[in-house]
Structure formats: C-alpha cells, structure tokens
Image 1: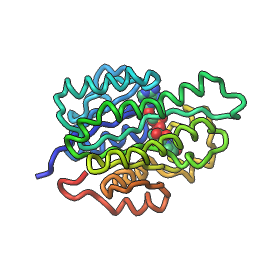
Image 2: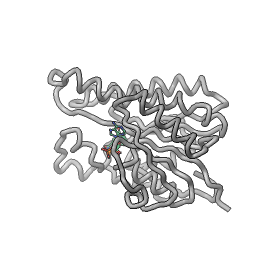
Image 3: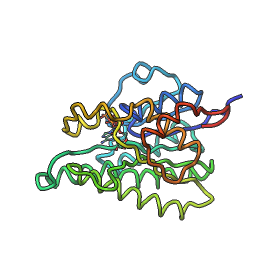
Image 4: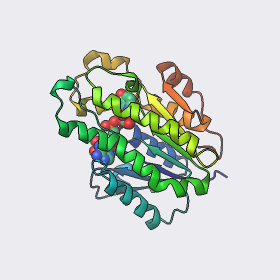
Length: 241
Ligand SMILES: NC(=O)c1ccc[n+]([C@@H]2O[C@H](COP(=O)([O-])OP(=O)(O)OC[C@H]3O[C@@H](n4cnc5c(N)ncnc54)[C@H](OP(=O)(O)O)[C@@H]3O)[C@@H](O)[C@H]2O)c1
C-alpha cells in the first residue's frame, strides 16, 4: 500500500505550486498548501480533501514562518517528509526604475521568507529525515529586466549550498531551477511575453519534471524542455514521492 507522506508546499494558490499540491494529493499524500490569499473553502479551491490551506503571506517573513510552524502543530504533524518552498514574486523593468519598496518586497518573499521557513520547520524535516526542495529559477544566472528577482534566486542557491552541508545526514536539500514556464507569473510581474510564450515549458510538464527531480534527489537541477519531456515517461513507483 502507498505510504502517505506529509508534504508542505508554499505558494500553492496558483501555477506550479497549485499543480504540485494537486498532483501529490491525488497520490494519497497529505498536503499543507500556503499562500497570501484568504480562502473561504479549501475543498472548493483545491478539489481535494487531502489538501489543507493556511494563509502565510511571505511579504511578512517572520509572521509567515510562525503561521506555518503553528499550522504544523494544529495538524499534529510530528514530521515533514517533503517541503517545497515555491512561493515567489517578480518585478520586471529596468533596475533603475525599481523602487526600494519593490526591491524589499521581492527579497522578503523570495529569500528572507524561505530562509526563515526552512529554519522553522527544520526539526520536523529532521524527524522524517525528509527532503527540502527550493524552487529557484534559471534567472539565478542573470536575467535582463528581472535584476532583483534574479538576485533573490541566486541568493537562494547560496543558501541551499550551505544548508546542504549543514543538514548533511539530517535532511536532503536541493534546488530546482525551472526555465520559462507557462504560468501567470510573468503577467503578474508586469511582463508581456507575447508569442515567445509558445516556447515556454507547459506547467504540467514542469510539474512532472520537478517531481522527478525530487524523486531522484538531484542536488541541483535545471529544468530544460528536454528534461520536461523525458519526465512524462517517468512516474513514481508505489510508496515513492
Ligand atoms: N513561471 C516561470 O517561468 C518560472 C521560471 C523559473 C522559476 N519559477 C519559479 O517557480 C515558482 C512558482 O512560480 P509560478 O510560475 O508558478 O508563479 P505563480 O503562478 O505566480 O505562483 C506563485 C505562487 O506564489 C504565491 N505568492 C506570491 N506572493 C506571495 C506572498 N507574498 N506570500 C505567499 N505566497 C505568495 C502566489 O500567490 P497568488 O496566487 O496570490 O499570486 C502563487 O501561489 C516560483 O518560485 C518562481 O520563481 C517560475
């Protein structure tokens, strides 16, 4: 029989996080999904009784980390098998036009919050000898019109490298860098992608590729379209994530 795991996914109200939550729940795993929105009915929103939602707005990183730690107590989770820290936001434009508030906002959501959340859930991850998967971006190598966003993802990679050493033998730590994917993220950041969007990876394929990287416990994985394609033919065996 499939072993049901405890899975935390941040930023699960849209895009990759939403699809990951539904994919893991459909395999019988218990999912705690987080986001900035107030939801009135988790079941209507996610369509699965295996997903519980809590509001954890990462623009206030300390409060978000606290809300997640409190939710773990409320749901009586003594351990977390897998945490996917996925929530992020972007701002697009020339760096000279970016305000200090826009810069702080992205750093809070994309970098400070995942660091504090990782710290808050560490004992539960250690209890399961679990997995922590950070969602980065290929923008970590530098991305025109997305300078601060790129910097937050590069910062996350540095954090993951350090944590991988510090948490060795306690929890597997990895970073997965998706390439451009057909979610609403670009539009939310103010970027019109136009026809180029056709060449982006589909959300479904990116989700399969992320799941495969998690299953394979890749340390660092860049999601190319080719990796996305090959993930279509790779599915979890019974009891696997
Ligand atoms: N799409 C791409 O091309 C691409 C490429 C590389 C990396 N990524 C990374 O993939 C991850 C998922 O992105 P996506 O494309 O799925 O974007 P998305 O569709 O915009 O989803 C992002 C999620 O994060 C949530 N979020 C935003 N601000 C938040 C806050 N203050 N507190 C808590 N949650 C917040 C969003 O909530 P709302 O529903 O309220 O907006 C949403 O649930 C991100 O880490 C992103 O950087 C995406």
